[in-house]
Image 1 (cartoon, helix red, strand yellow):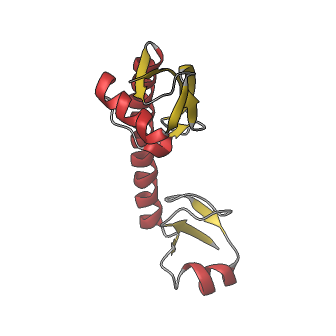
Image 2: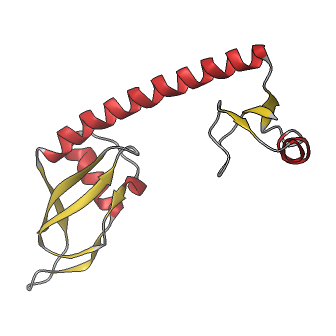
Length: 147
């Protein structure tokens, strides 16, 4: 049976996709939960419109993420933290600290979950990976100073 998915379903497809599933799966699982519709001619046209909108939104998100990535990779950011005499920090620099430094110095507002880095425990130069989009990643240079 051909159905149009109303939500992303792991192992089946993404929202707006027209997929062939077993009759029992559609009748017993997808339809009662409101996850799919029968693929009629009108519904297929609506699904095509949903897919086009999703593709345009994804392309716009990717382009804006690429712009932010270019802005972040071109500079180095300074993070101040309390440190001892030997350069070891009292505590660590976390992803939340990195996000606040990026917001203050570059004007870029990110979620702390987009940054992939281990807690930084020493002063000096470090790098952190920033995942802005599924297809766009960049590396940010950090300079941790005692302050």
